[in-house]
Length: 144
Image 1: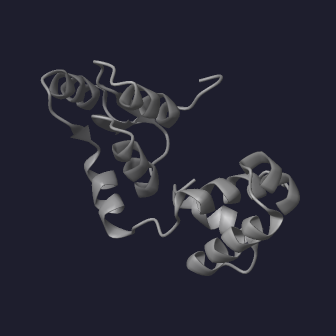
Image 2: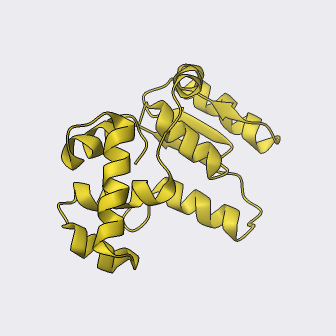
């Protein structure tokens, strides 16, 4: 999707209370992505490489008002909770793009010290040695 990702679209549909049910078909087989999708109000979350019969059943289930979630992903999502708060996630995303704390601060309307505090908290929560490693861990787990 060129401008928005599936999670952003799902959030907007939920925020504007659109009469639409969302099914995400993705390559991201990580529990963290599933958790974020469910928080965004999606009714289905399936992997692109799954059997077409599974997709057909899932679409019928969602159309009938139910939910359809890849079973293995559901188990993965159950196991490990995302320790980051929203601001830590935002700051880590920008840090992962190579932005300095002062640039991140300008983008988010914060002070550079506050940005450094969020980065420090995220690094500590993830057991990382630095911001790059924290970004990599959070991204790998699907929390970004």
